[in-house]
Structure formats: structure tokens, C-alpha cells
Amino acid sequence: MPDAPPANPDAPIPPKARAWSAPTPMTELNSPAGDAQPTMSADGLRVCFTSLRPGGMGVNDIWCASRASKSVPFEQPINQAKINTPQYDWMPSLTSDGLTLYFSSDRSGNLELYRAVFSGGEFTTPTAIASLNTTFVESGVDISANGLTLLFTSNRAGNFDMFLSKRPNTASEFLTVMPISSLNTAAIEAEATLAPDQSFLVYCSTSLSQQFMLFGANAEGDGWGAPAPLTIEQPEGLDACGPALLSDGSLLFHSARPGGLGEDDLYIALPK
Image (cartoon, helix red, strand yellow):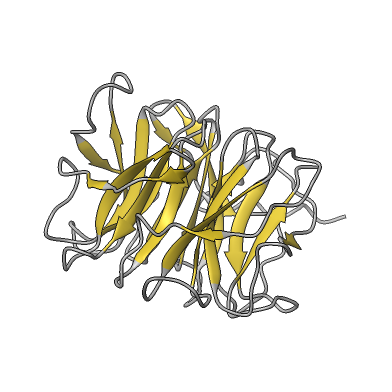
């Protein structure tokens, strides 16, 4: 029997075994309009996402829905009137307690990062995160489960790349910004999300095609190991992006895959 061909030393090393069931649409949240970029609180009782559905304030709006327990569907999504504008308001990220919402908006004329707190049954008027915003695009934000690491996408270095900022405690502001150099390429890398224990990162990239695909990478030392496409069905030629890793290991994302209601729909893949 001939020897097996030698391993390709340049081939990407897949992340540690992480497997999900086949993605299923979040039927009670999806609409015939575009629905994208879902985010959920750690207890699974509040979800927010971007939608183009009628009844909004502008081009893209943020909508949120709640439920009494994880065993029942979400109630009807509600437009977040105090944070939405006639401009783009999108790419939300909830803190683990569901009481603070990070998102991006171009209400100032440029896409920037904002933050709003939940009070009196709704998210209140947001404030810009001045320490992170620049004259370039800042979007695709995600806040870690412990609230100490903020991930976002920016073209401040030329390409649309992923950046992170850390703070010592939740009373401090995010200040220092660093590119995620081990994962950024000449393609677009965007909308990164951290697993609650920060051992794994998921993001979307156009590095293998003209469409966005979901990739994962394991934490290694102070950085990240070689990325690989996620082992979920990713139909060729159809975008998949907006990932969010949940406390129970589930994966939320949006996709234009067949069988949905609109241009993009929200999906969940449960861990195996």
C-alpha cells in the first residue's frame, strides 16, 4: 500500500471540535424583510436584532423581543424607538445581563459605536463611545460576557478589519485599541463574537469567496490560532454573518440560505 501523502504544513488547523446541529430559522422573529445580526442575553430571555421590516424609524432599525422562559417562543419584536433614527442603526450586542445594548449608527454622518441602557421597560437614549470612535467606520460591535472586552470592525487601517479594546473593570471606559492581527487579512473580516469563556471566537470573512462565511478560531496564548470555516452548512454563494455565541453553546447568525422568509433571516444552531 502506498504511503499517505505528507500533510500540508500551510493548511489551516481546524479549531477544537465544536459541532452544532443543523441551523433552524427563528420563525417567531423572522419577517419577509431582512432580519440580521441577532444578539441574546445570557439567560435567553431577551433578543435584539437588525431589521428592515415596516414600522421602523429608518433604513435599518434595532428591534428587541422578550419571553418569560427559554421553553416558550419570543413575543412580538418591538421597535426600539428611543435608540433608532432615520439613519442606519444596526449590529446590536447585548451585555450578558441584557441591560446594556451596544450598536452602531451613522446618525452623526459616519458609522460610530453607541451604548444604551435598559430602564423603565425600554432602552433609553444612547451615548456615543467617544474613546473608540474615529472619522473612519466603526461597526460590528460585540461585548464579552464579562463586559471587559469589546470587539468591533473598522476600516481605520485601510481594510475592514477586526479590532478589540479591553478595560480593567466595567466602571472604566474602553481606551486602548488593538487590531486582531492574527485573523485579519486583505479580505473583509467583520462582526467577531467571543464565547462566554473567551476560549473561542467566531467571525465572518470574505477570504475564501466573494460572500461572507463564518469562521472560528481557538484562543492560543495571548492571541488566536489558525482560523477555519465553521462546520455548519454554509451554502455556496450565500452570505452568512452576524454571529453570536450564547452561554449554552448555541450559535446565532443570519443567512440568506433557502427556506427563509426574507433576504436574510435569523438562525440558531444548537450545540451537539
